[in-house]
Length: 181
Ligand code: ADP
Ligand code: MG
Image (cartoon, rainbow, N blue to C red):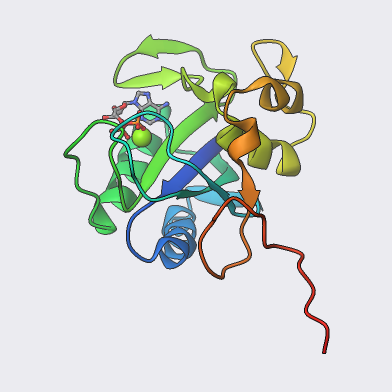
């Protein structure tokens, strides 16, 4: 019998340790089981930490779209297992973390269960989720609005910067810079 696959959107963030390596290997881990198939991977963007303690390192964020035969709660457990594998330590709410994996949407499931709220309750106001998501899924909507329009209105939109794999964000985007030889 063929399994039924649902489309899900996952948001990944890291602001501790080797952030880029963590995201790369987390993507591989998330789509490793046959129950999770990769659809698309966004570029990595860099952004200031929102909320939580001041002076945190910048985040790297990205979004994946997958199709999965896992149930929403099974998918959450899988995401948490991948977080744990990357030594995520939960100390301070919204504090620095080696890896955060959030489920943004799962099909058109709506849930206000605090263990798994769907769509993710803060996704519609987070440009660091909406913008990379819009690059791989431009027609997507949340609460009846185009995600690119929501991104442009989000408070943190101006804090996003491209990430070219080198150095840290000092307020000036570095991706796309061309060095003359
Ligand atoms: P946050 O992602 O809000 O910074 P955490 O990653 O520590 O914080 O998540 C706290 C709890 O949020 C998790 O234990 C999880 O059960 C719950 N949660 C509720 N909805 C979701 C969702 N859509 N995706 C991921 N976690 C969720
Ligand atoms: Mg989380």
